[in-house]
Image (tube, rainbow, N blue to C red):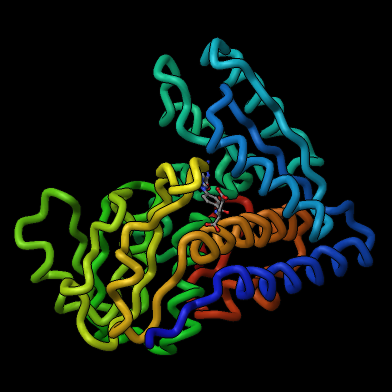
Length: 312
Ligand SMILES: Nc1nc(=O)c2c([nH]1)NC[C@@H]1CN(c3ccc(C(=O)N[C@@H](CCC(=O)O)C(=O)O)cc3)C=[N+]21
């Protein structure tokens, strides 16, 4: 029987640490860290995620605010809001929920958030730092994935990892994080020829294609570790919708360990958003980020540098 990697429990532990970090900042006389979430339009899935993020902030003592904007908002108005939040000293993290409406240039909007407040890690400066292994803010889902893998495997040196999916949010950044830890990384996607045979070689599978039950039992090597990043809403037997992952969960009992959906990567994404926000606040306050940062505790690879300067 494969072990189930309990993302909710691991996220809960990370939240305890984040709460302790918030309390320490407040005890030192700093205002609590602040996160602002921007939600454009009323996509039901986005509403659920944003609500979870706001509730999570409350649990750990992060001040949160929400900007709900109609999907008719102009790009200019959105950029004006971001410009204001960029210079607001009470705001340490800005998250603009994606996807954005068609008429808005997502790259332009995400690139308008100053890198120091870009707690999603989507700004080109943070993307570039990640790809060169020079710090910056690491995107929440890939960071959560690394933490989940490390609950099962300490040292990734030489491990064969197959990433399925090449998105800017998951596939590409997680591949970079894995490479930083000396894993051998193969990035694939739904157009990759002979995908089952490639996946079957993997010690670790990161399934992030957004294709329900794509990864079947016969794709999985005995003893592999599987991280299922997929979340697709499908109609359930009871008439309600249910969430399914990219992995045929019931077919992978010969794996060493697997993350469930829900309760795997999703909760970790939110926990990492909170820890990124505290990290951004620490940097803004000039509090030493090298000693206490959760990222440094884990791997020592992703030292966050404040104020946009490159590390020496
Ligand atoms: N700027 C931006 N940053 C994001 O990080 C971002 C985004 N936009 N857009 C959408 C995706 C998706 N995402 C999730 C967060 C939490 C769960 C989560 O908590 N999932 C629960 C279930 C949630 C439910 O019941 O629907 C679970 O897997 O257990 C899932 C998905 C963040 N995203």
